[in-house]
Length: 274
Image (cartoon, rainbow, N blue to C red; front, side):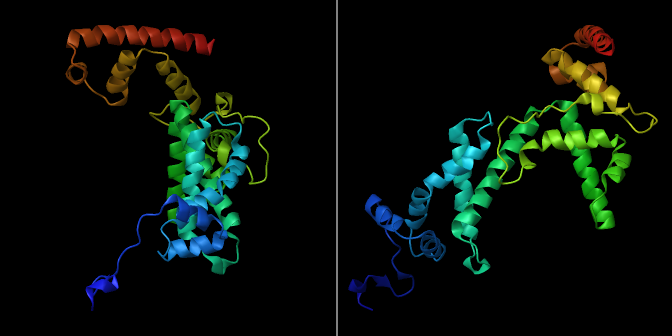
């Protein structure tokens, strides 16, 4: 083969050059489906940029549904943009949907997942722990019985009244429970109502959920150092010397600070109980 043919006998045609602004502008004139097809075939490097530019208004339309969110708009915009990129990679025209329909669903889902994860991080420690227990219990039940548990079965396994189970699911999944067309007129209430947390029965060597909620909230009122000391001593079963080694303190200091932390816990718990 002649070296002037623009190809190598082993590697084939030379790769396309990097897209420039003019190429992207020309590609924007094509419809979504054509841009996606050429992008997926690897024939048009600039098609993805053109697709994103062509559908920028779609991203802003999607984000109107999340006007209640506290996260910066630019962060949500980038999350939605990644959703459209995923849609371009996965779109299958054989399924009969327009690309915009599919892209809206994917981008919407990406934003909801992002907000749900952000929401979960802001939940109290006890709510996150209970949510994890509910999720793990549900997964174990499904693998064992090949079906999802009813709310009653889940409540019995987790040992929390049904109202408490539903409240945790509502609070931790608030951003995922709306339909695609449901308007968000007000910011949903995302803090779980701890008054609904009640155990179904007493269990040996285990605090009822209502007492655990009070304990977690009381611990959160401690200083960072006292929280760590209480956690290591009573949640990890460290000795005072082991805590001292872990935190770079003396055993005597740990003993003194433990007493202060327990006094503070007692005071906080007394107020909550009253």
